[in-house]
Each structure stands twice: as C-alpha cells, then as structure tokens.
Image 1: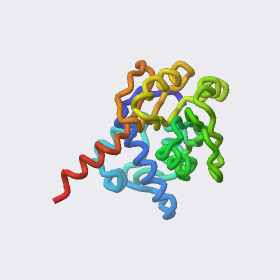
Image 2 (image 1 turned 45 degrees about the vertical axis):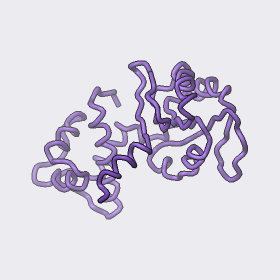
Image 3 (image 1 turned 45 degrees about the horizontal axis):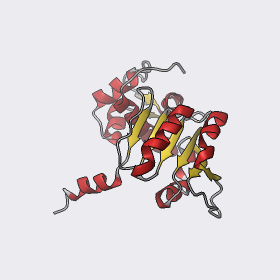
Image 4 (image 1 turned 60 degrees about the vertical axis):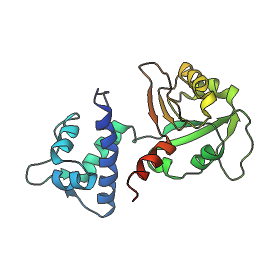
Length: 204
C-alpha cells in the first residue's frame, strides 16, 4: 500500500480501532456503525470518520462499516498483513519480561533477537540473545526497521546512534531519557515512573 502522510495521533487511533474491530469479528459481527465503533474506541464519531478518510471512503450510509473489510484495510496500513521483525536491546529485568510477552506476534510483530552488553542464556526463551557489538550487522543483514530499547539511561543515546546508523527507523523507548534522533526516525517513549506519577494524582 502507498505510504500516506498522516498525523501520528491518527495512526495511534487506528491501532485502537483495529482492536475494537477484532473483538467484533470474534463475536461474529459483520457490520458496525461509526457511532458504535467510535464509542468502543473512546473517540467522537467525527474523529473516527476523519481518521478513516485518510485512506479512502468506507462504509455505507444506513449500514455502517463492513468489519472484515475494515480490518483488512487497517492491517495493510499498519503493516499487520505480515510479521514485522523487531529487535530488543537491553535484556535485563524489563527486557527479559518483554521478551517473554506473547502478545507481540498476535499483533503482527516478531521479536527475532535481543542484544545485551553481557548476554547470558535464558532457558525456555526461544529468542537468541547476542552481544551488542553484533547488533549493527544483524540489523543490516535482516533488514530490521524497528527496535525496543530497554537499556540504562547512561547508554541509551550511544546504542540509539548505532541502531539508527544501521537502519532502524522506529524505536519503542523504555529508557527514561529523551533520545536525539534524525527526523526520519520515530521514537515512542514509555516512562513507567511518569505514568505512575500521573496515576497517583487521581488517588484520593
């Protein structure tokens, strides 16, 4: 599918729509109105329709969207019609927990290797763990474009520089630091401490 330049927030919402549609398909629902899908996704119907118009005109007035067709279209846009190879860098406590998470493949992503400064065998993992020094060549050889970063703050930028130079274009960053990357590289940061801090505001 031709790459379309659309807002990052719309891409994020596409993932939410896809999960809602998957639930509908599991329940043998064939069609869904924009109002019902928007409510399930937690957005306004006008926002949902605007997001979908980036990719064409879908739905039939009075009938709604065909669930199966919309799942297919969004899967193509998000790249879920094939497994997207991903590497993980930093196989410590958090990294190891993510490597054992079984939900990535279900959503179209396959963690094919992990890297660490001091790689050690992890029985039953099923994913090879290599020395960080082997990472650039692995990225180039396997044409990997996505990475999960779970290294300490002190080494995050240096590792990021190596990944970007080798061809990584998208990083899910769990290191509590702001990464400096070129414009063509996308970084989504997850700071667990900040998220907990935000939640604590609502505790009374």
